[in-house]
Image 1 (cartoon, rainbow, N blue to C red):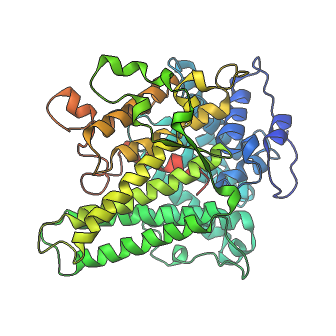
Image 2 (tube, rainbow, N blue to C red; image 1 turned 90 degrees about the vertical axis):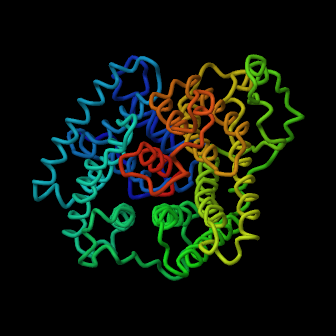
Amino acid sequence: MQHGCIGGLSPMNAGVLMNGISVNPDQPVENRAITFFLTAMIVEPLSVGRVVGHLELVPRLYLHSLSTSALAKVTTAMAISAFCVMGQDTRMLRERASRAYGEAITKLLEAIRNEEERVKNETLLACVLMVVVESLLEQSTSPTEQWLKHVRGASELLRQHGWDKINKDPVLSRLFAVVRGFLLRNPANDPVSDGFFHREISIPRGVVLPAETRLGRLAVNVAYLRDRAFHTLTLSDKSEGIIDSLVAECKHMNQLLLDWEASLPENYRYTTIDKDNIHMSALFHESETNHTLSIAKILPTQLHCYPDPHLQRLWNSYRVTRIFINTILHRASTLPFPQAPSDSILLAPSSASSLETLVSDILASIPLRILDSAFSARNSSGKDAAEIALAYHCLWPLYIARGAVTLGLDTRSGIRRVMKRIVYRYEVRNGVALMEAGDAEAGDDSDSKALGGGNRPLWCGPWPRDWIEGVWEWTFLYGCGTI
């Protein structure tokens, strides 16, 4: 049995999905979970026509795949895993997600061993999607070994397709770029030694890559640069010129990101509204009980209004990426002489100013309705799927903003309170682990630990592969369509 029939690779939208998948609350959880994932986490009614990364291939291939296929089983596992990231008591859902995960693994192995199934694009996509499933199932660590197995499996399937076929097939080309990014991001994978994945898919002359794809390439490169840079900055014996070279590379990458922002068309931009024009009393009441700043006071004077949630995530992906770059620049500028770069006198204040602006913009991007029901639409009845997904994807940018090395303790405390409000209001299952990761070893007393500034994420060397940050980073990149 097929799930539906979607011809070619034409744009998918929520209406098509709603017609192809049952959304009756009395239906099995699998149906409701798939609807939630495909319509809220990937395709949103207000974001129709936008590029949402390679996950946009999922509904197109899923809806005309057999219900017994590996892709169908993996998609079901992915959807249920996403469905149970919210809620206090999700034991039943987690048990169902674990069963779905086991079924997906079994079916995927069967497909890979079957000559006819192994060469299908659906099987390759299913293999790549297992990285997403395992990310969603984890709570406090990155499933490094599991990721490694599936990325290697996907890379082997691509090798079997061959370079000529990959170049001619748009689906294979998309998935090749994704797998290549995973491989180059983690040198431990090492199947690039034969040169197969050192090649890039050629872009036809005259074709302009979507903004999401261009940002995604920059974001993945910055993630790799970040690990190298943190390793370099922590070396006790730095070779001559290595810091100046690192600073030059970061400046170049920062300029590429600024060029990306400047190139955005008008319909990708946001508007602002004065905070003073909004009745904010609902967000002030918490400040009476402690000495930290209230949520209302920490919000910038200008708040952002985005055309749709997709763009809010995309812009925050850009800001997170620039926070990484400017953190490296600022840390380099504060190295002791003679290790500091030649322009450290100018670099320190300029990178600090950039970090302050980026953090302020992330705070300004958080919709008030996410923070307080008083700002929800009057005809709104509860939290819909799109709002839940939006709230979930606010946490990673806030976490990185809180880690900016130049922030004062009051600001860090305020950002933590924004995170806490989202985590508990939307019952984000692994949100507490992320929030507390930023508390690590900031001081001996609980108050200072809560302010952040400990040994992660931006205060030490390269991120260990099993840190929870790895899960959230890749999940966020998936969520804003950049991979």
